[in-house]
Image (cartoon, rainbow, N blue to C red; front, side, top):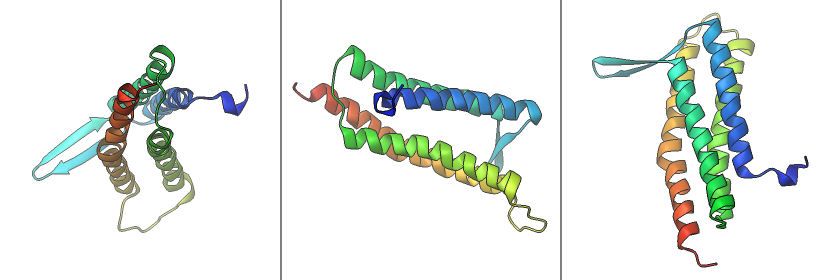
Length: 150
């Protein structure tokens, strides 16, 4: 299979499978959680729930691209598709590169900032960018595809 035949929905489906594999492997070795402190309340989200949510997000976005391109035969806006794909797939790659860096390479004997705190901060920042930047671009891309005359 050549690389020019790989479509954007293939990339999203590949990333969704990678999220599922990494999430299950990570949860079997140690039970990790995302801790969010808001005022006087701690929200604790297990790793498996985050894995299931991210898998669903990437899989359904890939399915949305497939639906528009194959079923409805509509043409998407290339810059919007590119920006949306870079944000979502890039955020996945950035998070796991930083995860590997903090867990394997960086050996902080004395640190004022805990590695898990830094990873949680990065994860919350990436989720915010996905919600407030990438999702409106995704919706606008679909609306423009349906409103455009062929």
